[in-house]
Every structure is written in C-alpha cells, then in structure tokens.
Amino acid sequence: PTARVPWGINWAPLAWKESGARVVAKTNEGSPLQRWNVWQSVRGRTSLCVQPGDQLVRVDGRWAFPDAELGANDADEASLAISRGLATEAGKCIVLEFIRPVLRPPVPPAPQLDTW
Figure 1 (cartoon, helix red, strand yellow):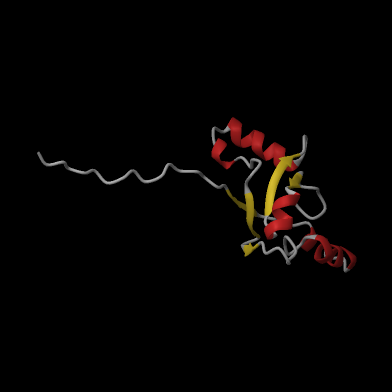
Figure 2 (tube, helix red, strand yellow):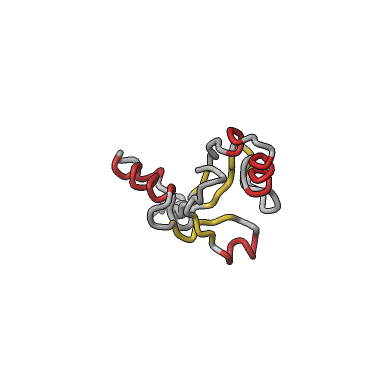
C-alpha cells in the first residue's frame, strides 16, 4: 500500500482511545490488505494474514507511536511530496509490521513427591 491507496484497515476505536494502540478491527472487502490475506492463504501462510486484534507496531522500520504519522509517505508528508512533484517518494510502498497477542496456557505447577 501507498499513501495514494487506502489500505483497507478499520482500526478499533476503543484501543486507540484507551492506549493509542492501532489495533485492527476489520479489513475492507476488495482492499489491498484483503488481497494480501487471500494471497497468504493461497500460499499456505495463514499466520501472515492480518486479522482483527492484530496491532500495528512498526511502519517503514519506525515504531508506530500514537502521536506520529503512520509512515514517511503518509498523510501530510505524502501531500507535501505530491505538491512538490516528488511522486516517486509519495508513491513508494509502505511496510507495515503487526503483532498478534497470543494466549498461552499457564505454567503447570511443579511436581511434588509425597513420602509414605
């Protein structure tokens, strides 16, 4: 995805309000992100599909802080690049990195030996 193409991500408003985290609520049909998910499923790499609950952590190798733009060619910076005629900079791809919270079972208690 680039700044000129909508990615198709709907962010969870509650997560943003509570902590500033960009958590995926859903993906739009026909979007670049949904096409990515289909392609990863076809290739048998379903763990790479972006799913609801995944959190955006890095964009273009930079941490996705709540008070920062999403990328070097996103929003205001992209508009500035386009207005200056730097279409190649504004049209370059944006790399998004997500994490997925995983619930793991608790550590079992240590075995105890009973004496007779």
